[in-house]
Amino acid sequence: QVELVESGGGLVQAGGSLRLSCVASGSMFRANSMGWHRQAPGKERELVASITTGGVTNYEDSVRGRFTISRDNAKDTVYLQMNSLKPEDTAVYYCNAAVYILNTGVREIWGQGTLVTVSS
Image (cartoon, rainbow, N blue to C red; front, side, top):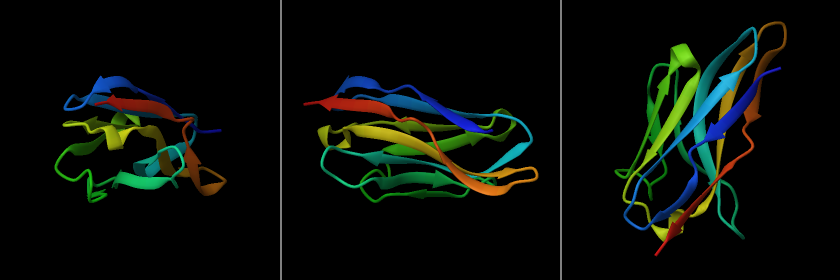
């Protein structure tokens, strides 16, 4: 079994910064593409940023230039550095990953979510 555990959410004022972390744990697996999604109240879940094993990144337009996704492959960890936060960034942030599990194949897994609240 492989699971993702997020940390780093919280309350911050507009213009502030937060860093989210997500660690994949388990046995006999390899994390391929990893990313962050978010879901604000009353809205659908949306992709925020993603990163491949080789470091190729993709960002949603509203966060490009403010958020930076990175990963440490040796630690099976993905990070999301969020700067210049805005109230509209308030949401539950979910980590997800495409994980190859030995004898099982590729599975998409999700973390439990971490709440980010940006006050105006």
